[in-house]
Amino acid sequence: MDRCLTISEVTLAATTGRLIRVVSPAASHASSGTVGIVAAGNLVWVADGGNAPTDNPVAILNAATDVPIRTFNTTYGAYYPPNSLAGGGKDLWVTDNGSPNVGNGGVTEFDRSTGAVVRPVGSAADGFNSPEGNAVAGNHVWIANNQANSVIELSAATGGLEKIIT
Image 1 (cartoon, rainbow, N blue to C red):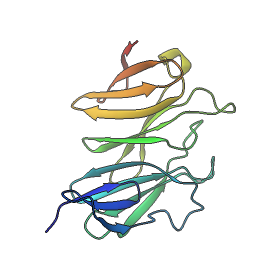
Image 2 (cartoon, rainbow, N blue to C red):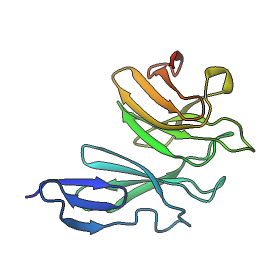
Image 3 (cartoon, one colour):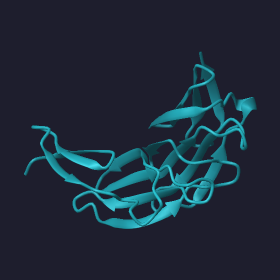
Image 4 (cartoon, helix red, strand yellow):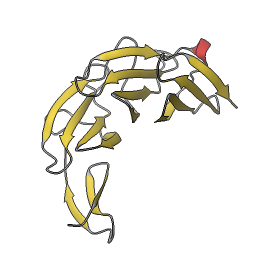
C-alpha cells in the first residue's frame, strides 16, 4: 500500500504525489479555511480558522479513513482563531496571532485526546507579538513570533518562558 502524506485537506501519495482524496474535516462548521494540521499515529488534528471568536474547531480524524472522531473548540479566554498546531507528548499546542481586540496572541496547550485546556500561555510581557507557527520536540515548544521577528522557547512541561531568540 502506498504511504500517504496529508497536507491541509488534500491527501497525496508520498511516492508519486498523486491525489488520493480531498477531505473537508470541518464541513459541519462555517469554515473559513484549514489553518493547521498535525498527524501522530493513527490520528490527525485539523484546525479551522472558524468564525471567531465563537467557532474555532479542531477536528480529530482517523488517519486511515479520514472519518471525524470528534471536534473541540479552541476559543479560550482572550485567544482568537488558531493559526498553527504542533503536537508533543499527549498535548496539542495551538497558536493564535491575536487581533486588535484581544492583544498580541499566544499559545494554548490542549489535551490531544479530550480537547480540554491544559493551560493558556502568552502575553506581551512574555514577548508574544503575533505568533504564527510552532513546533514541539522533547520538553521544548518553539513559537515563531511574526511581528517581533523572534522565536519564543517555552518549557513543554510547565509552559514557562525559557528564552526569546532574536
